[in-house]
Length: 83
Image: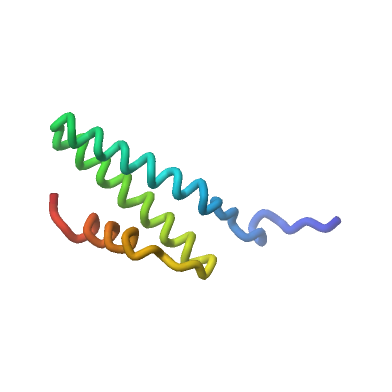
C-alpha cells in the first residue's frame, strides 16, 4: 500500500448531508436570535448562516450538483441585504 505525503493528499471534503444539517441548525439559531431581540446576537447568527450556506453551495458545486433556487436566493439575500 502506498501513501501520499500529507502535502500531496487532496483535502478532505465534508459530506453534503453534514453541511445541510449545519445549514438547518444555523437557520434555527437565527430564528432564536431574532425572537430574543438582541441585534448583536442576530448579526452573529446571520453571519453563521451565511457561512454555512456558502460552504454548502460550494460543496454542491464541487460535486457538480445543482444548487436549489431557494438556497441560492437565501444566500444572495444574506450577502446583499443590510440588516
